Length: 514
Ligand code: XMP
Image (cartoon, rainbow, N blue to C red; front, side, top):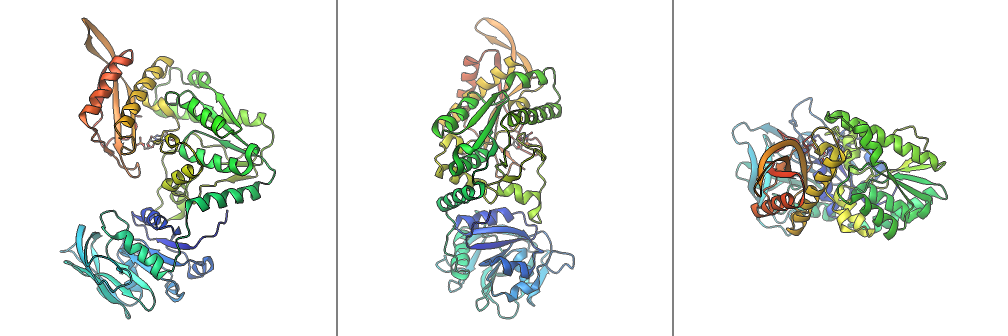
């Protein structure tokens, strides 16, 4: 899908902050794309980028084997901003010198002094805190450059060649700890590149819907709706474009959170009048899972059964030309667009077989980051509780019940989890903590209730803060909130007599218990 906005190129040299840089650029209302660093000057020219940002990276710019850029890109007349390794590479390529600094490595918050007459630091404070993380530094400027910022241990913390619109910064403007990082980025994007901030969610949504309408014409589209943010927003965009030509299949495997199936059905059927088929397949899934306690086997069974149910239902509908999926930009980048590609370990249960006979896959969110998907969702009028829903694993509650799954266990877990979610929302923790849920641990222990001895289930509460789910910290939930949740679960949920709170980070633990 080609929607034309002014666009900036983020060239990935394998830095850990590549996606963050791109998100920051988008926050300045400028569209950008991440491409691997071996993109050629000819491709860059053809794409018509308004600016180029070199990311950081783990290598040394003087290392023969480190990633390089096509030097011809410096002849295109396009402004370039190099960040950390990107700045050093720019310096080396244009005739400067970079050296290793064994003794005075800078790591963490550092104060820099900037030259306010520099374009990059226009309207900036003369001294500001920024985030440094480097073991090399620029020792000699390339011809035409001057120093525009210094720090105690870094005599060239920023440089620029204003004639050619080339800029380099040793620190990371994209990181939150860099106080005025967003201002520096805006200065580059607006003042050096001349971007007009035309990347806006309302126009993206309107343009995409118009585009989908034209592309789909009078053909039919099928979508697997899970009730998660991505598939909901994708489906609704298509629905706004072609209405009842879209059919959504919502497979309720019975492993969803309490009342979730009904909520999804209500929103999409009643509020949006969508063509939604809810398949109540709880019994079928439970029968397949009966007696199975190995976590990976449970995942596999659910994944396979999901595909089977989806296929059966879609066959009943006759020919559908298009399949709509909620793929988002990080999925695209992670599957190999950037140099820092990370392979996703989890395949969503929504994953569908490739050869189901569709002419084409439609992915309206392919260019969006998660926070942009949420903005688009709000723009489309999807209720906040759906738009800001925490991530939920495809296999659902099955991987939060240790051991085999029964209807009784599911009921206990659903009730306990609902109480936890309710209390988190009441105390404003639902937007602060990235994922939180109850686990049925499979442990039974002794307790006393009233005058009697009990021997019953242990529920664990799990709550984590994280930015990418690759690593996570356990959330410091206030004791009184934990106390309230614990009391309520004990009083309101039968067959539970003990609550524990999980205080392990990831690593060494994972977010889920299975
Ligand atoms: P872990 O437990 O691996 O979880 O630290 C990281 C994130 O991934 C989610 N998760 C899954 N998502 N299918 C999914 O669609 C799965 O099998 C699966 N396992 C974990 C988990 O909820 C967390 O957000």
